Length: 103
Image 1 (cartoon, rainbow, N blue to C red):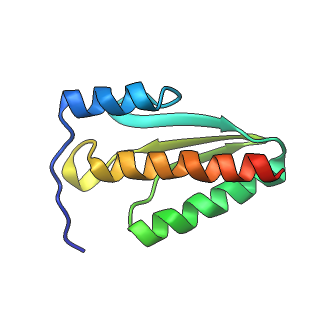
Image 2: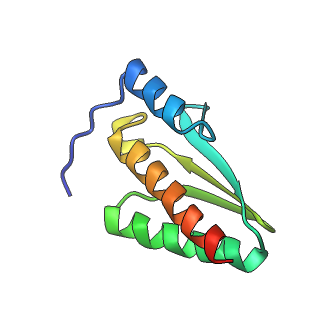
């Protein structure tokens, strides 16, 4: 699948981080840890992120530690952060809010 591999500018990254304050820019990646209300809610969240990631053909690193789920995003083949990372990060926030409110 061909897509625009243009990296985010510093201003675009700053704007995203200002609007999504739970996300951090660490080690060249966008990273956020979510704390689910239960272990199973965390797994449900991971499953929803996995489906969204598969549909977007853009897969985050996912670390699951009991109720805590950490996502790390970077567009490896672009050599840094792109709109694909911020789009999936924002979608993950929406998915987590849905899971958290249902549990």
